[in-house]
Amino acid sequence: MLYDPSTYDRLDPQVKAAMLAFPSDEKLYDLSNLSPLEMRATCKAMCFPDPGFGSIAATQYLAIPSPEGGSIPVKLYFPEAPLQAKQRPPRPMIVYFHGGGWVSCDIDTHDSFCRAFCKLTDAVVASVDYRLAPEAPFPAAPEDCYAATRWLFEHAAQFHVDPARFVIAGDSAGGNLAAVVALMNLERKEFALCHQLLLYPATRWESWYVKGYLADSKDQQHPWVAPLLAPVIRGLPSATIVSAEFDGLNPQIDEYQAKLMDGDVEVKRLHYNGTLHGFLTMYADLDHARKALQEIAAQIQVVTTKAI
View (cartoon, rainbow, N blue to C red):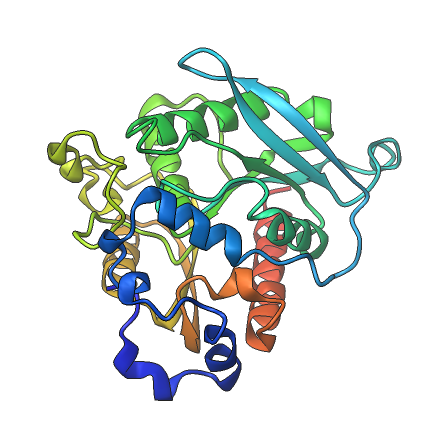
């Protein structure tokens, strides 16, 4: 399960208060009980306006060519107006993949989070609106995320960002996709990645995930679904992994960290006690989430500064 309700008394008091706004249905613990439509409605209901880390300068929508035809919507977040930014050295870019179990969420659900992350990191953030299952099952999502990252890398100069300081990032299912894009590029070698930021990532398939992502059950063993099964790890970019104490994904997160380290991939683990999976996007209500965001952003600034 994503969350064990027996741990409720050990949660941070602010987390307990925030949980009062959650549906009390046990479907939130065993996600296999949720249909994709129910998951989408739940995620939309839990969105909040940006409570503010300070304003950013601008946003821009893009339509990046899709590998299947059509386009991949992307929203860019700029910490400084583009004309002013050109008076400074190029900034890092963080290519961000939202969570939502591969079946829900979008640019809008993670808009506040991406604004905050742009402000705190002083980097250009690109939020990728990859195709969702079950309408577009695996491998549509990783192929979209990979194609968007490659295009942004190839057009880095257009947005005054430094191609040597490209970071891929994501939360939950998006953390899975960030890890997968790194693995795909290890094989294809079409662009350079400075770092991967994995926020409580899914790294293997679980029976309690929302159904719909996989059209074929055999894909549970594919390394682009389960990075833990990747045959080759050595050569991946360094990683920051973020986890929460009461997160059902922790066993697989621990395993993936060990796998990366065994492959000589540098890993920084940031672990937060008293809290749940998904806590970072709840920073409007959780003081520890706001502090965590600042700590994570500081870590990304250190990594991208070293890459200059």
